[in-house]
Image 1 (cartoon, rainbow, N blue to C red):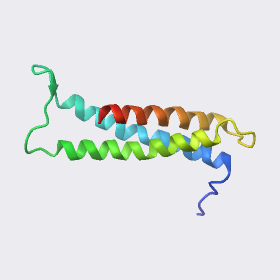
Image 2: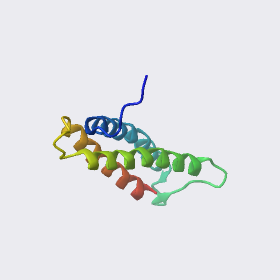
Image 3: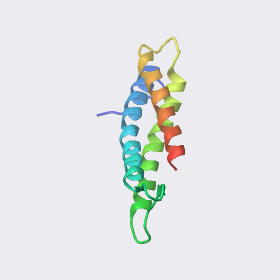
Length: 108
């Protein structure tokens, strides 16, 4: 299967929508790790000294941030262009990618 031409705006819209959808899953996993490690009696997130929680959390955030930023940029480039016949996918990639990237920065 050949890689689609990323110069075409409809292909950029498709990639933006798919990458935005992909970036949501690790973001939810990172938020789940924080909720799981939250101690209500202390009112803070407790990781522990010998656990593997921090590397797993960082991997989830990075696995979510990269496709979110690419989705945001592809959606930004292709949204509102006349030759794009799928503007809804461009806007989806733009807004969901931007929201996920924002949540990732806040989680970090």
